[in-house]
Image (cartoon, rainbow over all chains, first blue to last red; front, side, top):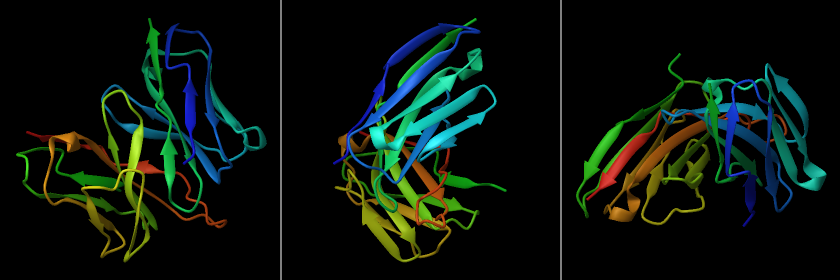
Length: 108
Length: 116
């Protein structure tokens, strides 16, 4: 099946710093989404981004489907950004594969 | 608007017992999913459904069964629980886009299941 690799596995930042998270995938995909899992376990969809670039406040994402990667940018990080960021890819209608996530810790 | 609701939130079973997890969504979504998340890992797809009356296997389907008799509900069953099924279970739903892609996923709050 398709492989999804996220990097880095762990990231520690000071509040106010910027960061880039990467998601590489091994085959063509129909869909790609980024999620944030907060320290209480809640999963929130950040971006639905099969291709191109989207921005939402301090967060933005870019997917280059032809080169099989996606990037999540976090600017001016805040302590509330802490948690695990997952990338998930979809190869046909319905079926999905998640990466193992990047654990982000933002220190005040 | 409740979104995606999972019940129960916590459950402890003994090996060999059975149980059913219920997922309900009120957004009229076509797609529904069951995932499990083990410590330090991403979510793994157990089963999914692309519409009422249909189900399909995901990445780790063994030991689980599902049913989607109504569009708004997706049930996950464990017929004979094993300690390896101790995990956090998440349900999710999404609409079917115009290009037949599964669009933005909405997740329930999770069910912590322990099998002793």
